Image 1 (cartoon, one colour):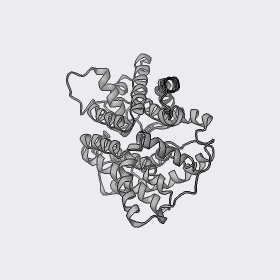
Image 2: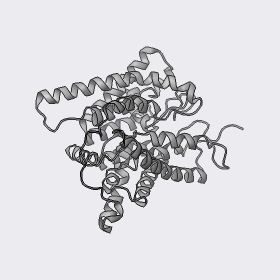
Image 3: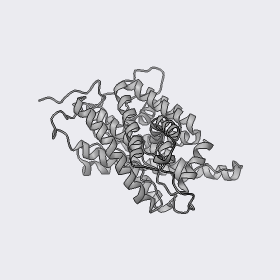
Image 4: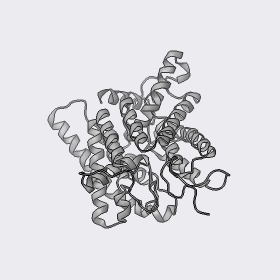
Length: 371
């Protein structure tokens, strides 16, 4: 955790914009669950219904309607950053509770579709709004934790209602992580966490690295890109995320790794800052885009090409938005993914071989719609 914070501060000192954010709905909230709101993958016994819902909510950040996968991911977050994992859990539970007591779409609630934005709010709060201080003295530490809990609960509590409000505007299109971006950027554009960081040394373009360092960077970046979906910089966390995806669908795991790898490779081609690439910041939005394609489109060669091309496009857009948002002292979160995936979704049926799945799930299970 300390290594992650030191790396984050080093990158912030160059005002490099690192970030993101992740994903969406199919039925009412329009995401990646079967449109009949069927609870799949989870037949576990002895786990309370509320726990299952919350774990699914964590999984739904990356389109997984599975409590098992959500549990693996939460464990991976705990390995990379226990404080962040705790706030992610608090955000998920808060969003679930708010949607439950408000009475909005119970099918979406059961599938964790009202919860994933709250999970992401907690992750972002732990890194950008109330990060743990260097000094772990009790007064300072307790104040930071209390602040983090307060911000997470407040932001996560409104996330289901932001999603409800977005439904008319987006129509049948999934909501991706727009609600998370709206809520979190509302706070970050006011706080401007990158604005008061002094300039450090010049960036280190990746094309200036020796070949052995470049190979090492390229090998580690994809897994860190997967961990950065949850705002963690850790290859172990990335491996846990990949494992959780693989439990749900090996095909989706291939899409995720492909997307993160292409995003990192695109950054190398563009000559981006080596430290940003090494931290996985160029991979997470691209991984989300490839996951979205794998979930919503019928598995065809054209869909695989769309996944790869969409990942590269997302990385290029991240590079542009990183500069724009860096100028105002805030990260761009997962907006590159949201914008790119919206465009890809609207390409449905426009190109032969690109067809939306009848009940979005995974490459192995997606079937074409009825004629």
